[in-house]
Image (cartoon, rainbow, N blue to C red; front, side, top):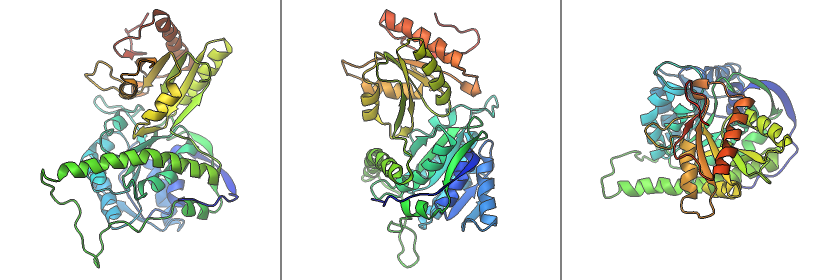
Length: 406
């Protein structure tokens, strides 16, 4: 859908990523918000509650008894044609897991923010991406933001993507718990949110529960038809890949900001490229820029689109490197290569005779500190790998006490 480019007047606000999400929900005119508190997402829905109480957002806030109910209520609201939103993190996302599949299987364009957090046990309230990676096969389009500004922009884009007739799938916008959710940054929001609502108008021309036109959702599908329904989700995910890029480009035209599906830095002549995701990209980027000042031919990239996996763009962006080092922030237990994104990158290049070597590294589990020195150590090891001409066949667990790699 083409949107006329116009001059947008901005106000600059100090916002955490949680608050940036709440402002985007207000500006995109959500109808129903269902919520249950869990650290570190709670301030998202607290701020939305303030907007509703102050009359800044005309929406229904549903306080439920669990995250399972929060997503269930959002699905029910979406089924009536309402624009629905919820938010969660960590164990809350796990409690929702059954309903994740119901939302996507019913083709409900719900949008949910996830402030990523490590999973219990043992109990951890700190950051990693274990929760999000557990949802990778739930047929939710998934964006991973790298700043509060991007979190704001991605929520608005998410509704355009989710409600597109060729997609009609729910969308997650994820970002680092605490590292981003509770860190304040300058964020530009429009003085007049009319421009946002014009960019992402509500889609009322979809199947929905209507007493005047009764229909049934989610009935039993026997073996003669179930496979076809699931294949429709496969096709919708393929369509979503194109739609994410299309919507982002239109957003850039209207608002002057866009992110694509992969962000890059210093790739022009890089022999080694580090690929990561989320707020940690800033640390990686600072480290790489310093290393390049010392003559190291190294670059860095950030994965923004996780589902559907942007295979074509991965090949185009990383294919020229000699070694790609994927720094994951979650563990796929029991796999020889246990980095979820590393597995996808390896699958993407499978069978390509010109493919770069690929190395899997796990960092930051349970918010284990990752500094510029950490990145420099990984780069030094990577250059030794490049000299040997053979990448390790197993994942490296960087930063674990008592484990070192020579």
